[in-house]
Image (cartoon, rainbow, N blue to C red; front, side):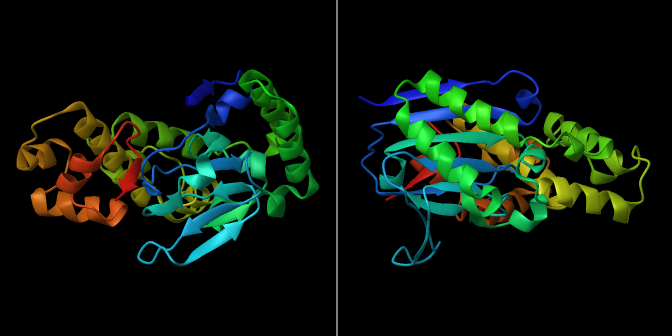
Length: 273
């Protein structure tokens, strides 16, 4: 039986982290999955084997191997992973910009990259995984994650107020804004704002906003059954259906129709069949 648990950490970690999650005995019928971008980062720890594989988008015979704890940086398009590496896993889904104070590295250095946590934390990463393996219950595992993150947090790396403001606007109004509506309310030059935003979030404000609009689209698709794509595109802030399909393919590698046909419970995980 599949075990799935989540945990929302209290402050101060709740300022940076969306959720802790844990899977055990996850064995779906498909071998590969596309993971779609959402503008944030993820820490994934394989508890069954000290190995995580990330595959080439077009040729699944090619892949990169990492030790069992990996940071998935902010991505501009989908990544491909195998389900075998997810059989027993624990992870952290950071809020956009939330990994910055915990990893002590600019987010734009992790853009479109997967990096071993050991590269960033050294022996602490190995020690944390060992501690996770020593405890059995999900709640105990979450406490281990909490302990190490509180040790590593760097309060001096708090997000710039302009970034906090922009993130809230982009996420609250994913298809009702123009970028200028936000930048005009920020007391920074356009160049400086882009610089601090990329350092914290890993991508430009424009790219992040496009991904939030895409994420809103995924949510609406998953809530509906019969969809009029032309009306849908205009409602979600696209110029027309062609613009909508172009953006959707850029992020997912799929047409909206194919995504809708193949989607299962998790909107950002699409089986490769």
